[in-house]
Figure 1 (cartoon, rainbow, N blue to C red):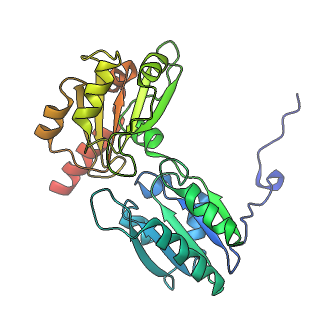
Figure 2 (spheres, rainbow, N blue to C red):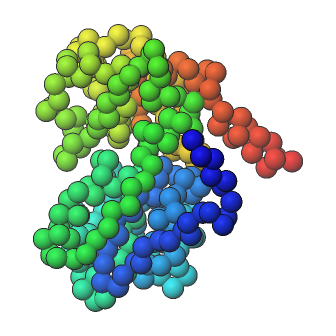
Length: 278
C-alpha cells in the first residue's frame, strides 16, 4: 500500500455548489448546537436571499445568516400557532419564481419527521429546482450529547425511530406495536411529551418491560438540555417532576443505562454554569 502524505499540496480544494437564483434548498439545521451544522448548511445560510425557518431552529444559527437575507418564521411546533404546510410550500415556490435563493431551514433532518418530503414533492410538481441538505437528526445528535449509543455491539444492533404524534396530534394507531417492541432493542420516539403516558402504556401492553431503562431528553444539544432518567412505568411522573419541556425525544432500551458512564455533556454544562457564576 502506498502512503500518500496528507499535505495541502495533495489535497483537492474544497468546492461547494452554487446556490442558484430561483432555487430552493431544504436544509437540516441539526438538533440545536450550531457546531453541528454541516458545511453545506452554513454555505446556504450565508448565500440565501430569504430564509424560511421552523421554530425548532436554534436562534444562534440564524445569526450566521447572510445579513441581507430576509428571515421568515414558519412556526411548526406542536400545539402552537403555525403556518399551514400547503401555505409554506406555496411561499417557497412564489419566492423562487421571483428569482430568490430560498433556504428552507428545518430543525434536525428534513426527511426525518420534518415534512421535507412533502415540500420537496410540491417543489418538484412546480418544477422548481431544489437541493436537499441532510442534517443531524435529534435521535442521533441528541442521544450522543446524552451519552447514549444508538447502537452498541453486544447490546443493541437495531434501532427504530417513531413518532408519538400523528397529523391530528394523537398517538398513531398504524404501528405493528408488538413486532416493533420485539424486533428493536432501542426505540427512539420523536414528539413524545403530549402523549407520553399513552405511549408508555401502549409499549408495556405490547410486551416492553415496565422497568426498562428510558430517557426523556429535552432541548437536546443546547445549554438548556435536560435529561430525565426514568423507566416506562415512571416516565410521566418523572417528566413532570423534572419539568421537562418540548422539544424532546424519548429513548427506551438497555443502552440508555450506558449514559451513567458516558454522559460527557453533563460535565460541559456544569463547567459552563461555574464559569457563568464566577
